[in-house]
Each structure stands twice: as structure tokens, then as C-alpha cells.
Amino acid sequence: MPLIRFFIKLLPWLLIIGLVVFVWRSFSDFSFFGTREKEAPEVIVNHHTILTTTEELGKMELVRYNFKDVVEYEKEVSQFIPNSKIVLIVAGEAVGCVDFTKIRQEDIQFQGDSLVLVSLPEPEICYYKIDHAKSRVFSKENTYFQDADLVQESYRYAEKNVEQAALKSGILQQTKVNAEKVLKPILEEVTGRKVILAPQRTIQNPEMPPRR
Image 1 (cartoon, rainbow, N blue to C red):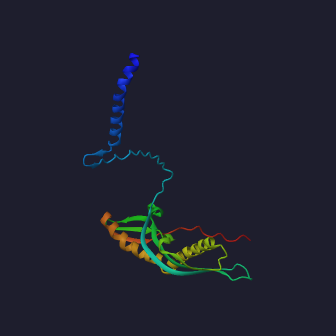
Image 2 (image 1 turned 45 degrees about the vertical axis):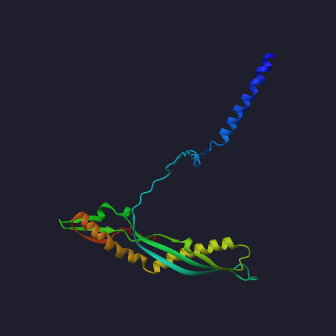
Image 3 (image 1 turned 60 degrees about the vertical axis):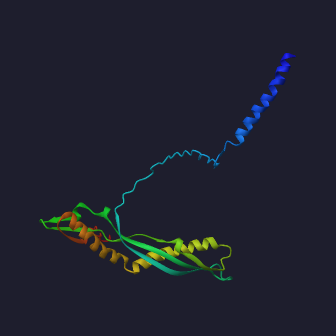
């Protein structure tokens, strides 16, 4: 009996302590001046970057041609139904460059104390591509549920046309002119001599006469 009476007397204090803990937990996120900001959770990020390949970059870009074109791509499907047709509004670019990795030791000749003769490789198109962000499909006709394939084919055709347009516009010749403008002052500043740029000579094996 004395033990039971002890627990009965202790019960109100236990209730009061429990109520205090509940109130403290309910209002612990608030301060006297407003809501207390919660701390941002810690974020841990681990990186495992792996080097897969390395490439030597020796191409110097010297000119960029930008193109805009309307491309009509028509494909025959059958003699009994109309041809499929895609019309694109295309923006593309082609870049001309000189590949310095092709320069050999014999292509640089010092003549006297005031002259350097540098034989440069032939200019080339580094790359050509379509800017898809600035290109769009204008219209589609008779695609027969092959829209995606026809659009992809028409873009491939348009991209190849960018290369041909750049060649016809003289991008290689302009690359050669720009090489003279850009490289010559740099080389003269580095060497302290007058620099003459000339086309690189390539030695080809003589053709053998046909066997009788």
C-alpha cells in the first residue's frame, strides 16, 4: 500500500514533466522574434573522374563561314503515292584551319641571319556543322508516319551541303590569306626575322608504268 500511495503522489509530477517536454518540442522551432531558420542539410558529393583519351590539338582556326539556307528534301516513296517532302530553314557554319601537326623539321629553313622560310600545310576545313538551335522544320508533306526519319535524313543532307557551300565560297583560299595575315606577324615577332610563308611541298612516289 505505501508503494501505491507513492506512485499516486508521483503521478501529477510525471504528467507535468511530460507536458513541459511536449510544449518545449512544439515551440523549439520558434524564437521570440519569429520562425528560426533551419540549418541546410549537409550535402556530400564524390567525384570519380577518369581520363579516357588524350588528343594533340594542332589545328589553328583562321576563318569561319556562316550560312543560312532553305533546304527542300524530297524522297520518292512509291510510284502510286505522292513523294515525301521536308522543308528546312537551316543555319550552319564551316571553319577553315591549318594543321600544324603536319609541319616537318625540313619545312622550317633559316636563311642567313634575317630570313626564315616556313612551308605550311594546305588549308583544310576543320569542321562543318548545323546549328540546330537556329534551324527548324518549316513544313512536312506526305511523311506517312516517318517524320523523325525523314527529318534526320534531311538534316544530314543539309549538313553535307554546308561543306560543299563553304568550298564553293572559297573558304580554303580565305584560310590561306588569313594565315598570311595572322601567322606572319606572330612568327616575325618570335624569331626577330623576316618570315616568308610558302605552300608545303609533298613528294609523291612516281607512277610505275603499266606492265605489259
